[in-house]
Image (tube, rainbow, N blue to C red; front, top):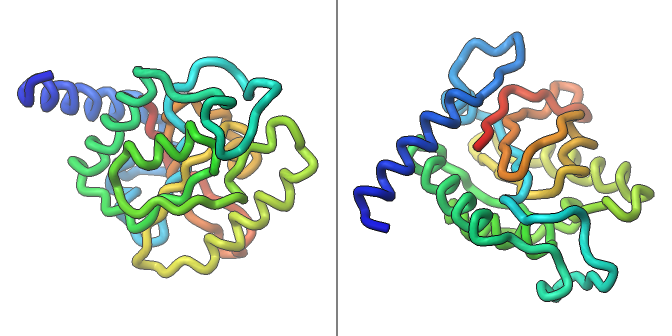
Length: 192
């Protein structure tokens, strides 16, 4: 793909993202401006990985046993990272589930250091860890400095547990920790 075509695709994705953004009723700022604000972080569902769940022989650390990104998902992750950079969002760290589709998404975004965070691992097959994992993520977020901006790449079930939102593949939910330190306030959604 030529540089001209790549730049045109980025512009289309930015415009599409702005058109698809659905703000909560209380939000009056543009989503990109919201994201630039201190204390605002993002949850992202991994890019497109066809299917549901993982095969019966799933093994953490062995991508050949997992549901993985397809070519569309890899392109989605790269394009999403490019749009985020083009919009001037400065991510300080990318935390990711250890599932290959999340690690690959996080790396392909190209936004900053990628850190594997077990509390972001899927609990699709075992809901007994949902409360502990959600609490661990919230606790970690309460220790983040105001000048840090995190992007957390994880799974639908994790995002739904934290926000009540059922995100599409590649969707980004902007949030901040509530003053009580235990709740997450959803501020905006960016969808590809």
